[in-house]
Amino acid sequence: MEKNFDRLTLEFILVGLLQGKPLHGYALFEKLQETRELALIWHVKRSKVYYLLEKLESQGLLESEIISHPSYPDRKTYSITREGQVQFSRWLAAPVRSGRNMRVVFLSRLFFALWEGKSTADKLIEEQLRETRGWLDSLQGQLADLDDPDFITEQVFTFRIGQVQAMITWLENCQRKIVDD
Image (cartoon, rainbow, N blue to C red; front, side):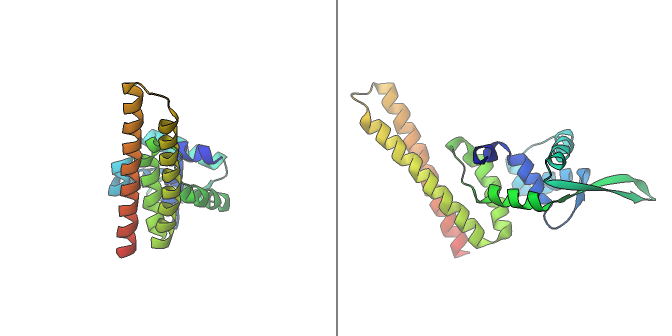
């Protein structure tokens, strides 16, 4: 299931936003749009939010309750289940498994890790550093194993190695800032 965690980021963002307080679908959509850090990461239509809330409820990660009010129509309010909390915690602690997921998936996890506290964020970064250093070792090993690589092959590996090194530098900088703050 860990591989699926990277593909389920928006679902876990919704689950994470429900921690502490149940919300109805539109309020959750607004919270997602108004939370500046998340708005920089995700752009989502309201219909997608409602679809995902129903999906998460059918999977047992959320539960709903119809709230009646005399001044407005009934509202379906969602809250996180125990299983939802367990799955969210697993998602939050898992490093991303590919570099292409750093911008969206890792930053989403880091956002919620910081909500939980500096030590949670530090652990997440440490796990991601371990994973990312593994990518670097693998790429460097693959390049070293090539017998007389052509120019393009060498440039592809050099480019990818440079990207991963930049990610490591960025992660180390994040870790320093979190610890120093």
